[in-house]
Length: 286
Image 1: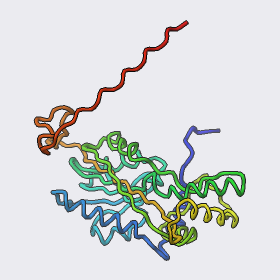
Image 2: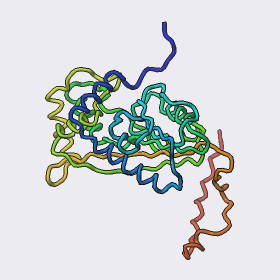
Image 3: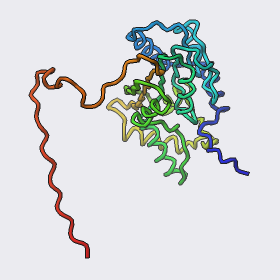
Image 4: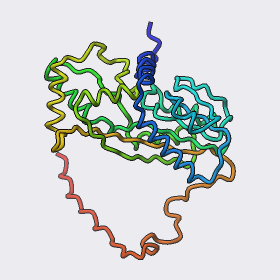
């Protein structure tokens, strides 16, 4: 009998195996970069955080960054006490969550009033080259299609989750980088070394056919390869930031409430927009 529960996005057992394999021979440079970025952002906040918590699949990254922080796994139910923390970081794991909003809500509940939430995840532009060539190669070689890359959210959608989770002063921003690789197998090795193999619950569990790998390599080089034959990989990193509501907290201004014009402040000449063209009248109905 069906329980009505939605199907799971992630095979959690497979994800745990992939992360354990990655720890044996890790290459966690993207995790290190994110930790560097968060450390820099925290220095810009005029606040000393005394009770931080980090949700992560790779605790070793954060133990040296935030000594004394509570480190919890990114399980469906987070091991966080309500109101116990003044800072909660959800570090590069939200893209594997079946319920990202639920994860953010749990982090929000763990915050003290005026506590800070920072969520970091890979965005929808990540691996778009790989996703496209694998889909085309699989369709040509096997005549079918199976999910090979985890779907990742867009910033315009994920930013709205902060407000839905009850966080104040929400901000969503992103940066994109391009990493160059020798070939498709080099890309696959790096993904494995970061624990980012295909852990989708609906994935095809058999090995990828050699003919499909060869075709994907050819398509990748033709569509995206540079003059030296290297394959670019796009990585988009999204940062979601919000504060637990508190009395006396800074509030955003209402739209249209500014006391001065931006053009005056910038000493710029303001150019009015051209009026929209008038639409032709609709023909009368018969």
